Image 1 (cartoon, rainbow, N blue to C red):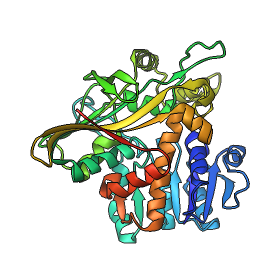
Image 2 (image 1 turned 90 degrees about the vertical axis):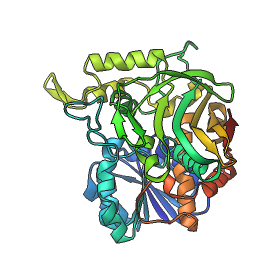
Image 3 (image 1 turned 180 degrees about the vertical axis):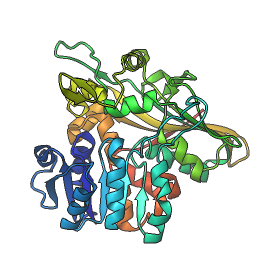
Image 4 (image 1 turned 30 degrees about the vertical axis):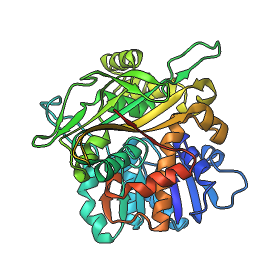
Amino acid sequence: MRVLVVGAGGVGSAVAAIAARREFFEAMVVADYDPARAARALPAADPRFAAAAVDASDQAAIEALIAEHRITHVLNAVDPRFVLPIFAAAQSAGVDYLDMAMSLSAPHPTEPYRQVGTALGEAQFAAEPAWKDAGRLALVGMGVEPGLSDVFARYAADHLFSEIDEIGIRDGANLVVTGDDGEPIFAPSFSIWTTIEECLNPPVVYEAGRGWFTTEPFSEPEIFDFPADIGPVECVNVEHEEVLLIPRWVGAKRVTFKYGLGAEFIGVLKTLHQLGLDRTTPVRVGGVEVSPRDVVAACLPDPATLGDRMSGKTCAGTWVTGTGVDGRPREVYLHHVVDNAWTMAEYGAQAVVWQTAVNPVVALELLASGVWSGTGVLGPEAFDAVPFLDLLTAYGSPWGIREA
């Protein structure tokens, strides 16, 4: 296996750090628009790794890198706005593809908070027949959320339930970032560009018999009690890939995604929207055209650099209700908790970045060994969950189940 990682930011760098401890691949090329950043992402003294410069929006340039390095698998580790050129490059070059976020959505033109417009991943699933005909695999949504959360859904369906009423992804944390004075500061732990996109778009909900529909951003608040001393966190509806992925392979009467954002974060996002600073369309400022959202991202700290100022834990998980295999009512929360102190000590990566990066590396190892295989455009739910969860534990990051 020869892997091209497009993007050397926090997640791309963490992918390289995690993969360096494994033996399943022959070569890994880390490519970024900033060649210096790509070089910094390489593990020391490991000849399997190389750095390269690439523009993630340039399909032809990505295809050239694939050919130059005899790549077999492309891992997309950049913002979802670059999904389609990277996805198309892998398809054109005839190699397998993985990503951690899917192609962008567009709200319904007249009823954005009732009907789905262009759905997340719709452009990728439209290409499914061509991928299948070519005998190649595009494994989409293979991060932590989406990704591990979808693996949990498949595990619950196969081993814990005979009938599922609801699958609800619930994400929460007690992470705190402090400034130079030791006081907490506003500093998102993940890409603010992506966070704005998913939090301000109309959230999608799935119901059997009704299909997919949308609601208002931050709707249906609920208090969810997270494990590992994180405790109760208010969670709200947010647009996310799991709701579009899980019903394709797992039977459930309802599928939702709710994120523990917190009142301060929601307030900031609403203000950005009111001021138009969430827009991606460039505006002219002093003779220069700039995207307001890019300006916001540039003004905030790079999430990858926050690890030494961050404390606490993050939890990704899948809450499932229904009828257990014994015919009795059952409610479980399958979860993966990561402590920032551990990821910083072990890998030099902050917790949210590391938790996202470990899952595609596990998936690549399963594909390299042939334990996972397939063709077409597939989500994590299309594969056996047990080998993934076993290997994730072997990586030193166990998962858990909490019964209601």
